[in-house]
Image (cartoon, rainbow, N blue to C red):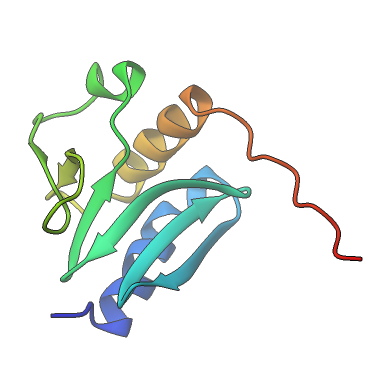
Length: 107
């Protein structure tokens, strides 16, 4: 089951306080980016964050589960209505993630 476009936009809007948010369709669901870093997934109308130690310490509830069959576990974020909380989680996650690799120019 794919995610509803309205839910995807809602999550992007809720995370907007963290930086420039962008979503990209991936394998029938969505990857979500902040300032060029992929920090989470939106799958089957659920929001998942890449697991980091930094964000684990600020999570209200630690719930690790795979976003799809065969995936590694991510933090499942059930409380998506608190914009300030989501922005904090995104900022902390992105702070812990490495910078994206520069894209190679095509010849």
